[in-house]
Length: 193
Image (cartoon, rainbow, N blue to C red; front, side, top):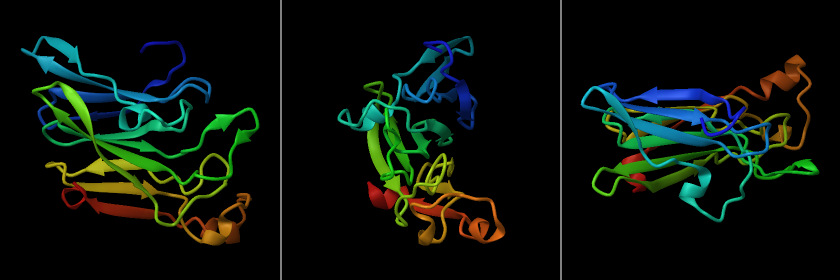
């Protein structure tokens, strides 16, 4: 980890051979942004660090805030495709979480061994929209899983459900709980690229 309280290791993933690993750092105190470190095992002796991945890796203009980036990670079998969940997607400001753009996102990156760089591949989010429900809206990206070849992606959105909850408050009562039935989305990444 690069700093104290970054929650390094909140999510981890490994290639099929075990020679590539991804380790996320969730961010400090809800303010600093999360990131993902990836490492390659060289000659079965030394772990070499690849370039760090963050939401700014996808788009440098994105705000530099904690949005839950790195809350979940997945690697393809060969370690060349990385999916990163960001289930809170909203800048944190002095006024608190904004009521818009809180549905969550998933960033997908592909690694080029020749240039030794991660390249942006896809940015995905729920079609249901956003929400303002406690810690996250739909929590799209709460969990991610890649197929071995990196062409199919599963994304969990455990609070996605009835759109009438948008802007509401989670009370825990049975009626309110039914609105958060949850959804799993399936994406064919080969179609997106």
